[in-house]
Amino acid sequence: MTRQNGAMTSPDTDAQVVFVGYNAAYLRAIDGSVPGGSVVVLEEPDIIRKRALRDAAARFDCLERIVPVSYQQSAGALDLAADLEARRPVAAVVPGLEYAVPAAAALAEKLGLPGATEQAAQALRDKVRLREACDAGGVRGPRWREIHGPGDLLDFAGDGPVVVKPANRQASVGVQLLDSVDAASAALAWERTSSAAEYEQVPDRHLTWRFLAEERLRGPEFSVEALVRQGEIIFHNITAKTVVPGPYPVELGHLLPAPLGQDTQAAFEAAMRALVAATGYRTGILHAEWILTESGPALVECAGRCPGDYLIDLNDLAYGTRIRLSLIDLLAGRPVTLPRAARQTSAIRFLAAEPGTVTQVAGTDTALALPGVRAAEVDVEAGHEVRPWASSWDRAGHVIAVGPDAETTRRRVLDADAAIRITTSPHTSTD
Image 1 (spheres, rainbow, N blue to C red):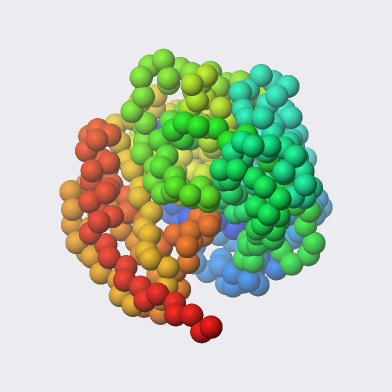
Image 2: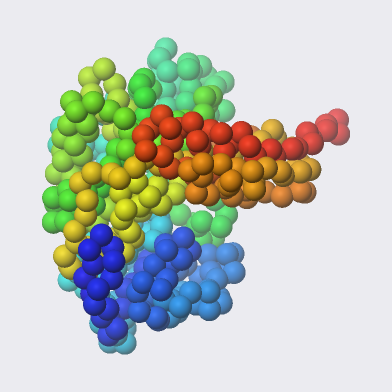
């Protein structure tokens, strides 16, 4: 099966694609473009139960079955390698979720298929390991330290601003920005970070979490989405990010391609090449987040799977690609042709509402009728509770727009955001 810009030309109906981790958005995007029943998903038994996935195979023509197996901080998926191959040849192993990245890489390696490599995947899943690899490989980043309690945080921070975060979680869960640190704020920050939870995203068994403190860098934030083949970047895009102010750096919006000068673009490209080399990453997709400091791009973190926040959809809208299909081809060792330049710009804005109980949602149809608007989705309805943003899970929906240039697209997505009204009733104290 080969594709030009993600267009399937010759289906291979004998092979199967194995996803580690259930990703409905990915399956929805490829359904109808890969052979029916050609996808198998490996998922944690607890997550199958929590997310009611037992009948998920009936939701997508491409999905044959979901196989229960432990893969988060576990080598359980490797035990299935022989059974998977005996049933049907495996064409590719795809990391469906953040917590699946090491298991997917290890399974691909065992099956002799292209992938990140297990060593690179472990670095991408643990920011302590990533910092160590980047320091050794000359990738610019903040001063940092692994921490084991509030005392470590206080010792590291001194009088300066600091970031405290889990080293191996996702979606900004537990990440905090502190302007200054004393004994009381260190204790509170440690409690909030170390107790961060994701009920539906992790199994019930004990998992090990690590934590680190970092120097708080200043500057605009960007991400780079890149497809990599045998250590060479074959596609990349730079995205401008908007982050909410305050202690929790949740992303409010994205615009791509970012309107940057040639020298700045070249600096990001060089930084990405250095990151690939430092981690030893081989084949797959990278989503690297950077802060553009006065000295150049400094790495915040990097994921080895398709990014969230609809960034793949935004890239597809801007470049005319189907990146999810191209990634499968890359991981199957098949040729992939990708554009070097975008056709247009695209942007997303995440919807916010005052904390409280939702009483009314209005304006979705108005937003969809605006020029360039491609999506307007509200994830809450009357009776739902809206919380202050502490992670990406707290956002109330999104709007997506496209346009011929960055300024037009930015204006269109903000107009769509303004058209939607989520009315809430504030919680009343019972004290």
